[in-house]
Image (tube, rainbow, N blue to C red; front, top):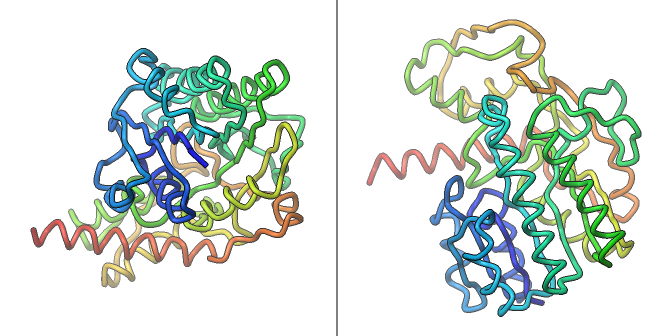
Length: 319
């Protein structure tokens, strides 16, 4: 098959490209490189079935005709604002980077007859709930601009399925970690500890608890659900059964950095920042009934990510 992947130079998008190419599919990748990194595509570029287009999705004239000539069989829309706190500071960031990029990509599918659309969504669409989050929850009230933009984008995906004969797969990601990741609590902790290895400032009370999914498990789940589910609209939570507290992330980072007796300073409160959902749990029964489960635990995923990031930092320092 021939795939068009947006946000392809990002953390998750680049792993997706590698996976598709390993399965002997062809990939046309697009990224504006505002958040993505060309280095993430080093493995993909070694394949003759891979091509890259630097363009902004919001400037349709710069890419639509090129992608139309490529004639993809399906679109993986991974592009979005990945800095949730930046989106909280300026609502236009998620309006443009998260919602409008989705609309432009959907419009490409409508105008050029692409019938399969795969969309990277998020747990943030649910808002705050005590009970496990399941795909058919009726009350979805996001508390971040990022979650609101993703939920609005999901609504448009649904309407395009109904109105224009599109088949769609919506994947609601939890926190995803692993090689090539670029932000999150783990990165904040490393940066602070490099400045002062004796103490660590932690936002909130450290008890925030979430599932952290290893990126390669995520990509495996995306492809598995694509192959196994054939409804016009297919919606899946992708996650892991275990969870990790923020304080435990700090412990992992300190251990991997070889630091002892670090004094933790908590800013207080139950959440780290405005728009942060301090804890949630997924209901994963839908994807598990298909036969998929993540192989790597939440804490092991974070440890893999920490080791990868520290190795990258050491490599940069040696150059």
